[in-house]
Length: 236
View 1 (cartoon, rainbow, N blue to C red):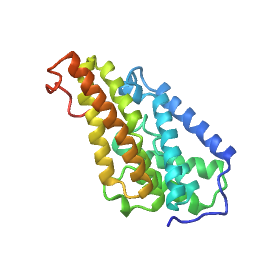
View 2: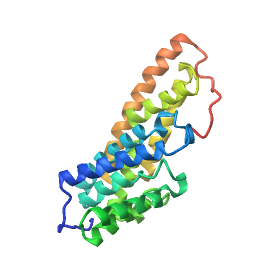
View 3: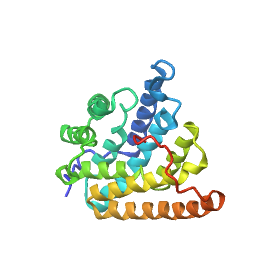
């Protein structure tokens, strides 16, 4: 079970203030860069996409925390800050950088107990951990599972298809790209530990499988050679 902290629950107004801070921080991170830095022309590297991803993860993490008995306030606040430094720090250090931003915000703008602040910052710092999720505190587990879930399902499929357009690929590559979303979903299932997140993952993967089946049928009608393996960057 998660550690309960009841002395200073986060009010809706306080949470909205945090959301505004995160939004503005991401926007400032992009504005302070030279034009074109870190492929800003890719939608998922923009401040708008990153903020939307953060909100998605916060919603998913909150639902998982509620069902799994984790501290909801710790989980949802950590989810808000988990990628706040994503646009200004390198991938391998963005979690630590985000924890620093969260710590400064929570200590200077709120009066939450130190134990609460440190649990939030620990979850932010550890959310990119690639080992066994069960080794992490329950609140961190909920955040990590929510982060995995946002990359699969209909949302993840849409992003992959958007990427095709930006890389000047045709619709004939769509089936293979959707397959990558399925692979990502299957990888997520292997890492996820909670019953709540596992149920969510299976539901999302089912939607992608349906879409892929429909896509295969329609593409096959247009081009019988659609099953040929396209030249796709393996890092996508």
